[in-house]
Image (cartoon, rainbow, N blue to C red; front, side, top):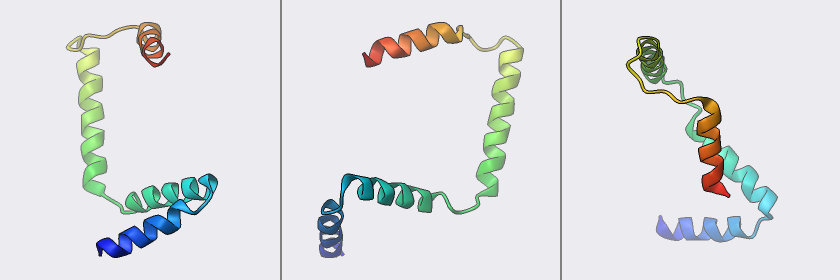
Length: 76
């Protein structure tokens, strides 16, 4: 199997950067093609919990302007 992967990698690296990007996107998308109703329900519950905690003042929040300023300062 490792030899197959090495052969495939060699073929992929011979593609243009645009073709490799397209392949990468297709591969990532293929990982997300399954329907996981349990995961969707868990994310919904988590979002509702976070929203409730925020509304009840249980979370420390910051203005978006401050968060964005800090984030941009770290990537410059």
